Structures are given as C-alpha cells and as structure tokens.
Image 1: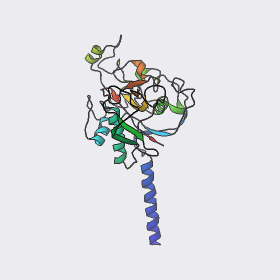
Image 2: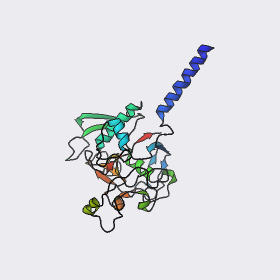
Image 3: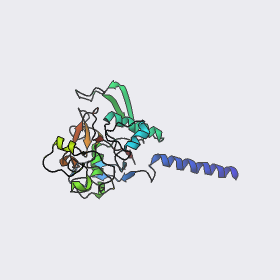
Image 4: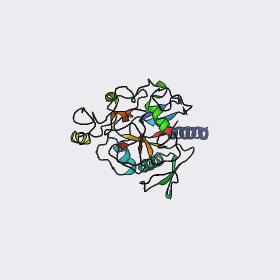
Length: 279
C-alpha cells in the first residue's frame, strides 16, 4: 500500500510539472487569444480565408528587465526596468526567444544557423543574414506572425473594429510623436521638435488596453513580426514586418492595419517586440 501511494504521488507530481511547462502560469503576463477568423473590419485580413489558431501572447511588450534576465545586458537607449527593450534587431529577438525557452524548460521554436546565408533574404544592406527556420511542434517562445499580431491587436473574436488597438482615439491607447514627450505637440511631424520635446518610450501598461487586455500594441515601440515584408505571407524579401508604430512615428503608423518594414539587422530606439506561444 505504501509503495502504491508513493507511486501515485510521483505520478501526480509528474503531471503537474508537465502541465506547468506546457502553458504559462496564471501569474505570468500572458493572455490566451482564442482563434477564429478576422472580425475587425479594419484588418488587412478581414474577409480573407485566414483562420488563426489559439495562442498565448504577452500582455506587454518585452521589458528591459525581462531582456536583461535572459541576455545579460541591456542595449536600450532609454533605460528603465519597466520600459520596453529597444535597439534590438530581428536576429537579437529570435535568439532571445530561444534562450528564454531553454531557461524555462521549453523546446526552442527556432533553428538558427549563423553560418548559412539565408537565400530568401534579398537585402543589400543586411550583412548578417542568418538562416532561421521553424522547429515544427516546438512549444517555446516565438515572434507572432503578421496575421497573429493583427488578430490580437484587433481584438480577436471580441473585436469592436477599432482603428487603433483598443480605441478609435489614438491618445487613449498609444504613445506616438504628439504625446510621448514633455508636452502635447501640434502641427506637422518634425524631428527637431520631437527631439527637443524629450520624446521617448514609456513604461508598459500605462495607456488603455484593447478588448483582449493587451497593452501598447499601438505605439510605444514598433514590434517585430516573423514575416517578410511584401505580399501578405511572402516567403522572401528585403525587410521583416514591424507593426504598431512607436513613439517617433506619425499616428497613422499606430493603426492595426499599418504595415511597417525594417531590415532584420536594423535597430532603433523605437524598435522592440513581444512574444507569443502556441496554445
């Protein structure tokens, strides 16, 4: 009887541990996005035969504290634990995803070959061009696809078809060039005025969330996605897709439908990301 009880106890412990590795814990800053077709009429994918599977997405952009815990350094221009990490390239963030997965006992989602030039990378200026492929079936952290990003930013099945992520008023949900500095700016976009206004990134989660409880998907920092920039779901290109706009850009960049682009090797003080995991 005692051996049977010990066996049952060990079995229970094994199941609990296995489950804790499969899904983020409740106190983690992740939101479960229930899949389906696009209901946000402002999305580039609305009316198309695209169906999204369930996934978990970070409630916030990855912070400098989270980055430093995994990577051991902080490349950001504007320093602060609760500020989104920036000055990170697409290559930097796929490495972060794999290292965080390993640290948390998950299977890395990406295969990264630093010695093989990616034949799909057509950029004249990207001198890195690692070949990065998907480890099918892996449960680790990854970047959202452009479709997944738009689906989540647009409110998923709870969408109210807002122009920005969570509102039709950008100032309610987004940090962008007019409101990300010492005072609210008017007139036309002007870099010298923006710089003199001390515009910069802001702490995560200050503005209003969207329908799913996600913060800063419009504004603050632009967010890397997996996809190449080109036709929707292109298999090659010179740029990777960035979404959401940032503190430097015009309000139009904050629209969920706006398709930004940046070379995978590019970095900037308005360039960050958030991570997702499969359901």
